[in-house]
Length: 428
Image 1 (cartoon, rainbow, N blue to C red):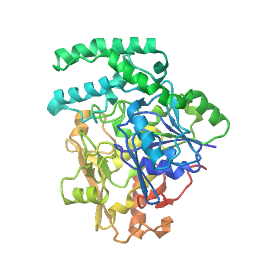
Image 2: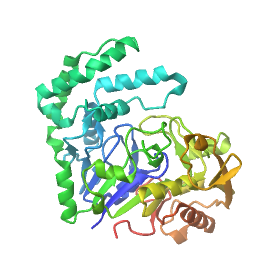
Image 3: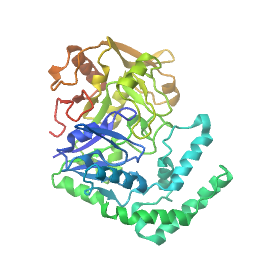
Image 4: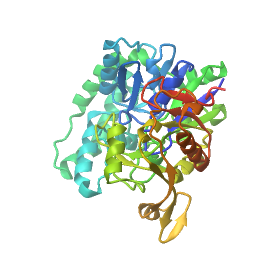
């Protein structure tokens, strides 16, 4: 049975939660491998809508074990709040597993995140202010706090004091903020220890054993390919690796155990936060996509920037992730346009460019080269097979598939769990 990676092939918000949830009934484990509560998924089950921020989408599937891997940064207050909210709605969360090696977001990380963004002013990155970046920075600087540290008060105290020695200097002398009391942070973190202890496990061992035993394991990325800290539109990126390679480092499962890599593509393109966006629309079409598509961030609450489909970044996502399949979402949102532009290349300094430029400067100045495809007016939300789609909708999907470089194996025609056309099984 396969081990699969499912990730965003654009700038995030492509509908990964829907795709993960669709597979949930056939999957034994769903694993978040990077990011934190800056990544949001909306999952619609029947008439119920769930907004998940930190928890894997598989937590909504009764037979599935949800896992938060070592590559995730965890705000314990957010984790417990999200679990409580699901429990109140009758969702069983008892099977959750949390890596003891995952790093913890502390109050001083969120403080540093917010004051830094304010200090940057016009140069700000557009972070969510949830402490994600500073937590990853501490991890790399080897002054981070891990989940397992909650169970050794002496080590926890030493680590918090070491981290704050430097941060308090910055907060007081650069940002004119009051120093943070280390003892208070330690007490707050210790207050979470017993509450999350039932979930803490050696997830690397569990996942490798599960794959060896023939279980189906789905690795779920947050954000998207173009927000990857190495392969995205740096510096307007997240602080981790949402690309397929992050699934290995973020879980401790080797690449030879992964069978398929599925990229989630929206039938148009959106982005939250600052940074270049070649196909961004500032007209009535952009507003229509935003309104019809309900384009507001699940976690941030910010309106998403909207634009036409960009085949250049889709090809790039195929290349850097080694994608085997695409799941195309929100095709229904495009119903009603007589013609639909698709970006097939860029113009940079008067030259046509068909691959994503490695230069940040070139990408910032890239102008989209559009090909017009005929639209459709028929309601497609009840379509169950590819042949149920209008001919022009079929042609649109086939064109995107050819331009993007990997087969489109499923199509979302509405927000509901059952509003999906499956062309090829991801589990074959």
